[in-house]
Length: 560
Image 1 (cartoon, rainbow, N blue to C red):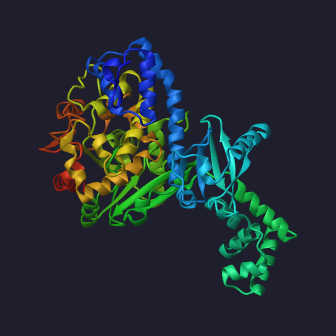
Image 2 (image 1 turned 30 degrees about the horizontal axis):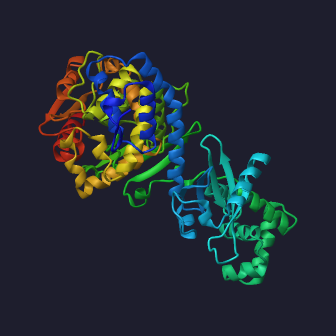
Image 3 (image 1 turned 90 degrees about the vertical axis):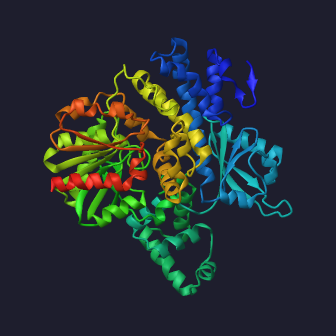
């Protein structure tokens, strides 16, 4: 097998071993995602399937890819974990990842040995043997300062699936959800929960009073109150409970936390729960204004663009965005639940909470199909639908030549081998994380350079960063579900029977949904009005805001 500076050359990927090596090297960050797309490209252009051997090899790789992706996610989450010192080690004692607290504690970096943590080889071997022998976690003693005798104790767990050790420093610190549970179940105040944590660390009343700048008498009274609320007969019992809570393995807060950029975002963010599923929603514009239900796009239609929010506020629009399953915070439906019906019920639940009886609909790109489904199901609640950059039902005979390779691969996979979507998404996430939040649109619009200049602006970078977290938060599950009901499923019957007014705008330079194909929407529904914005692409909701908003307002005036 010939080699290039970056690894395998496309010409040498000619057997199933080569295919496996290529895919796994991409997952491990050793090669670029574009190599696989280049190798698969002939199949997408010639409208034929993969060879049986290649299809089988790729299908069998799904489990390995998911396993490596899970490990990648764990390492990434740990690096961003702001909790107690934590590290991931290989079986040979090599440091694979560390969080900020561990980085400040030890003068070692990824790729170095556990020996740099003051752990002798014999001690690390004994640690491993205890885990194997007793089939459970064990303790590892480390020394941040080799010149001092004060150790830091870590509790270590072994993950056989990934062949790694996860180490977390022993501290009396429980998760926020456990903290809320202590408040709800025992009615412990914030101060009383802090007292409980001090007891678990073995602190005396005098030590607690010094730490909290309180009198000893006040602390003793607080301890007495804590014991009464817990139903404990001694400080030892209370401390044992607190220590047990703090010692439980905790999911990294990174997995469920709001992206950092949202802390100062002018969007009104909320969450609801429907039948045990979490539903995220966003709201902007003028509260109490004309109600608009927006079905967001895949990359930039979730209310993140400041100019669009300003327009809505000036025009008196109250815009609600219910995050679709797999995006943002909304959890995907169960295996037995129909996707579009789940989305409709999610929207109806939030509309009911707000008391909105009738709404205008707005959709961005892939949001068009769920918007059609909502209008079809509840026409009495819909005044009209305004669609920005709508997709078109794909026919197996449609040529994909004008579509950029990255996007063409997903469309082809959705139509011919849907199982490949997850494989491509997982590989794409590795590349997206290399680009980072501000630059990842360069990957999204690979082959469509006319879409990129906006993302070099200050506003564009903000949209890109927000979109990055919104998309990757659930490992691009939302994109997978979009491909299922927009490309792999024939939704043309929805469009043909829709009874509410539909007004769409499309860019003349849209290479993702080429204008020539988009114009077929009017053939399927002659009542649909389609306007073209010259020089605009898929990103027209960002680059041609005045033009698209003017057409939207014109439609809404007609509704009124």
